[in-house]
Image 1 (cartoon, rainbow, N blue to C red):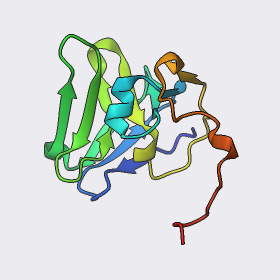
Image 2: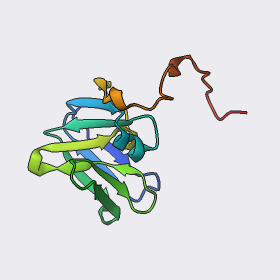
Image 3: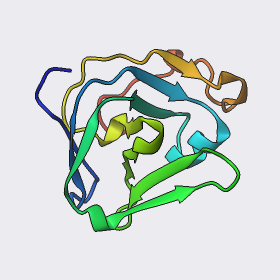
Length: 136
């Protein structure tokens, strides 16, 4: 990332944020918790121990769910449900859902993680038809 802040928002646009700093890692997590959070084959999260987040608007609309007995957390917009960053300064961690960003980033995923628990339908996806828009 360059020195310009990274920007993002939720789907309804109520919650907006800027991130200043570098992302150190980018993981695609296939664990069952992340699949439940995302409703998809995996979550796609960027991580930083040094970047800082500034909430531009809608901070009151952010809700955070912490799964009891685990470190698993998810922040989301209370209006539209979009996944949002989680800042944990006490442990030096910022986790940012890649899909919440509005700008290009210059880091590619480091790895697929927790593959031992990935969905059985998440196999051979590179060979299925690709359609640029909605199916006709």
